[in-house]
Amino acid sequence: MVTKSAKAIDLKEKYDADIKKELMTKYSIKNINQVPVIQKIVINRGLGEAVSNSKVVQTSVDEFKTIFGQSPVVTKAKKSISTYKLRKDMPIGCMVTLRGKRMYSFMNKLFNIVLPKIRDFKGVSNKAFDNQANYTLGLKEQLIFPEISYEKIDKARGFNITFVSSSDDVDQSRELLKLLGMPFRK
Picture 1 (cartoon, rainbow, N blue to C red):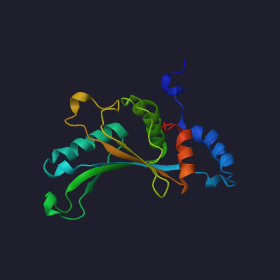
Picture 2: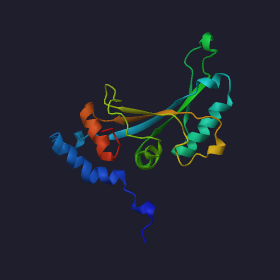
Picture 3: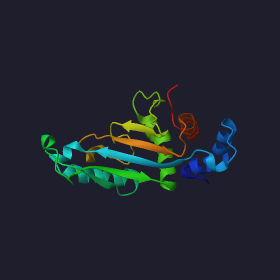
Picture 4: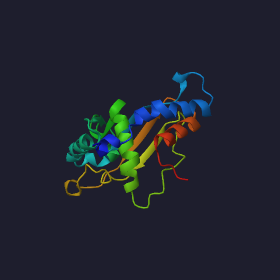
């Protein structure tokens, strides 16, 4: 008997089997090494409130470990700013970089479980690409992830998710994400 998790589409296999060929024909790419690929996913959370409440950083680190399956890097202030009561090297955020199996597993969970849970979800914006054709998606709260319990959080905190692509062409990156399952707005 095949379990539900075994039936889940492995995005890496789907990319290798179908998506590469489709992108090669659509954009007439001759070399298979030039086909765009998602190199990594960077998740970043800024914690401005960490200036007054140092427990916020540890809470975010624990949440990141739970959601993404690996320990985040705590980001620190680069310089002191007296207006914001910020001192150099004070922890003010955390970030995680996902690659390989964890990256594809996270994308599968994000596209098929997390994003559809958002109330009144009509799709993500088509226009959130930067000059290097990387796509950034902002989420407003961590509660939409199934690993987070409502009782355990003290405040809803969002984070940014950046999909780093090997392509410099926005159209190719958009098509790659669309074929991987990113629910773009119609």
